[in-house]
Amino acid sequence: MTIPAAVQTLHPTSETVVEVRGICKKYSEVEALRLIDLDFPRGKLTTLLGPSGCGKTTLLKIIAGLIQATSGEVRVNGRTVTGPGPERAFVFQDFALMPWATVMRNVAFGLELQGMAKAERQSIARNYIAEVGLTGFEDKYPHELSGGMRQRVGLARAFAVNAEVLLLDEPFSAVDEQNRRKFQEDLLRLVDKERKTFIFVTHSIEEAVYVSDRIVLLSRRPGRVSQIIEPKIDRTASPDAIRRDQGYLDTVEEIWQGLKHYVD
Amino acid sequence: MMAPTQVDGPVRAVHPPVEGGFSLRQYPAFWRMASLALFFLAWEIAGRVPISYAFPTFSATFAAFLSMLFDGSLFAAYGETLQPLIIGIAISGVIGIVLGIVMGLSRSAEWLVAPLFIVLQAAPMAALIPLITFVYGIGLVAKTLAVIMLALPVIVLNGYKAVRNANPSLVAMCRSFQGTKLQQIAKIIIPDASPVIFAGLRLGLAAGFIGVILAELLITPTGIGDLITYHRSVANYAEMYAAVVSIILVSTLTLAALEAFEMRVLRPEKRRG
Image (cartoon, rainbow over all chains, first blue to last red; front, top):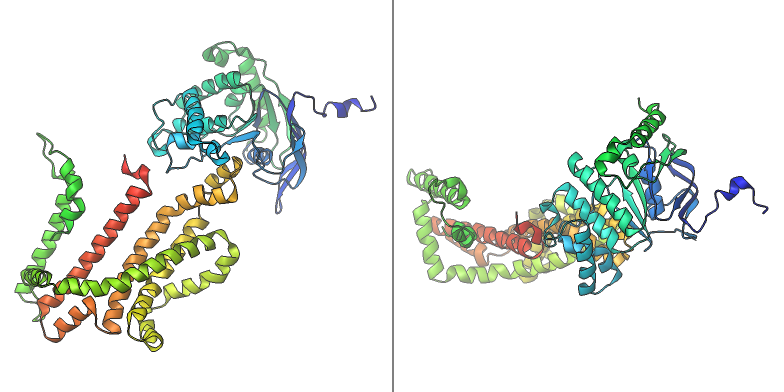
């Protein structure tokens, strides 16, 4: 056709769910993001990785519709994002659980806001509480749970609204190391089972390589896309085998070489 | 007196005594009683010394308290005192919470109303009470106004700060799940603010007690203020002290009841663990 090849690669295929086009974000004088163009393929887990202050969380919140971009636009299934929408669900770094509500009410909260009847939303919530391994904790309050369990509640809440795209903002950063590993393994199982698109923000290279289909490396402020890496790892192997896999170790090393010069 | 057993009695009674290693540490009620008993003992000794002719012993005060309780004068006095207090606190509670929430949600309401209450809170209210009598006389209205003037600012300002400082992450969570503005206020902001709003109510109630007693001492002696003034004027110091202690007792018990109500109704997660 008349479309040049270089532009064509930027155009969405049916397999692209989220398109980010020319996103810039300035906070008064500070430029957080500069001209970000990205496609997020359906059913894949894409990680935004970069040094702290590179604007990866800002980009995720712009995709979520929680923050307005200074310029550029985000399209989900071809429609321009103007705010939060039912096709996207967010998992918060600090869990954002209501301390006065039980696990059950927290998980069902997205459905409660939609006005779904109590019995119906509780049956859906119960299913996802089981999915994240919290059966038996339905009537507990968040302060009675460990950090890892709290984030499982946050994850179940995001799954419960059945959004196509899940946005995870450093979901494991407030979870201790042992729980984080277990959680990463569970996440991979859920990615496989739920067939959703995941956009994941982390500052941990190992975590990014372990869970991601694609890794988008962002440069230091102003954040720009510096590299896109697709780890070639056999995901059918056991979690421990993956962590010893040569492809896994090489990818971690490659990313570290790319990021090293940002570290003081 | 009866305060500690009323506050802790029913709760403590549920716990069976620990067999073997009996430790008083497990009985905070015991320490509270001991603290009160020590205070009363010191009072008794100070009264017997005596440090002043006008300072009765604890036992004389307690006897006076019982006699005032049984001759009905204490009940009659509280019937009068509680009237402006209850009306004033009810009005301050409703207006204060609504106004506080509106100010917390809207910047323009904040600019319009906050300075007034910040000044009112800083103002020495006792100095303003004589002014009320010029305008509203010496009746129930004036006393209710005194309660409102003391209670309202702290209720409004607490409500406003609580709402303004509602957890931004929870608000973002509600937005991300497409909660409407109304759902955001009703399901996130107000529940999140309710502990601080309630703290404001407790402070407001305490201030209301100050207001009503000030009014009864400064405007016209009625109710408990009348008991205090009358017994002082005829040098019945034990009765005067009994009236003073009774108002402290009533105020403490009311505040404890409000706190217990808050725990039971608004903070279900605080009841366990």
